[in-house]
Image (cartoon, rainbow, N blue to C red; front, side, top):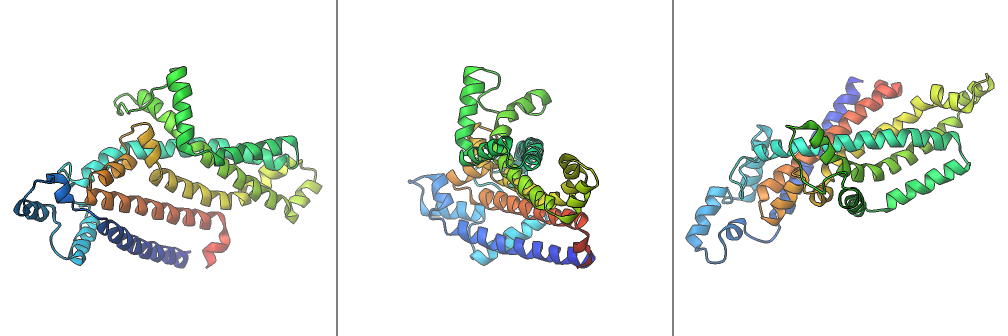
Length: 313
C-alpha cells in the first residue's frame, strides 16, 4: 500500500510540474500587453515601462516562471493587475461560491444517478431500463448552458420560484443555497446521466459473475443479490467517475457561473481573460488543475481501499 501511494504521489507531482509549464507557456504567448491594455492607446513608453516593472512583467520568462511557481508554493499567487489586491484574496472570496456549488451539484448527481442506475440494472431489458437509458442519453446530449437557460425561463421568469442569478452571500444560508439550486441542477443532470449509465454497466458486469449466480441459487432475489453482493464491487468504476465529476464541476463551471452571474472561480477566470489579467488566469487555472489532480489522487486511494489487490502492489 505504501509503495502504491508513493508512486501515485510522484505521478501527482510530475503532473503538477508539467501542468504549470503548459499553463505558463500558453498564457504567455497570448498576444497583447496587459500594461498597454490597462493604460490605453495614448500611454507613453515610459509610463508603460514603469507599469510593466510594477506588475512584474520585466525580466526573462524563465525568471518570471520560477518566481510564479515559488510564490505559489508559499501561498503567494501574485497581485492582480486589475484589482491590485492579492490573487489569493480573490480566490478565497470566490471559492466560497464555486466549492459549495460543485459539492451541491455532486450530491444531486450522485443522489439521482445511483438509484437510477441500480433500477436500470435490476430491470435489464425491460421498458423501465430502455426508458432510463433513453432519458440519460437525452440529458447527456443537451448542453448544460442551454438547459440552464431553460431552468431560468421556467423557474425564475415564469414560476418565479428562484432568482435568475446573483449570489446573496452566506449571511443567509437559506437564500444562498436557494440561489445555487438552479446552477447546481444545470450542472448535475448531465453528470447524473453519465454516472447512471456507468452504474448500470458496472452492475450488469458484476451480475454475470459466478458468486452472484451462487447467491441467486441460494434463494436471493435479483434485487437482493444486487444490493448485498454486487453493489460494492460495482462501485469501483463509479468512484472514479464521481471523483472526475467533482473535478469537472469545480473547474468546468465557467459557463454556468456566467449564465447565473455567480461570483465564483469560473467567472473570475473569464474576467481575467477579458481584462488581460494574466496572473489571475495563470494562478486560478493552476489552482483548479491542482484540485483536479488532488481529487484524482484521493480517488486512487479510495480505489485501493475498495480493491484489496491494489494494496499489495
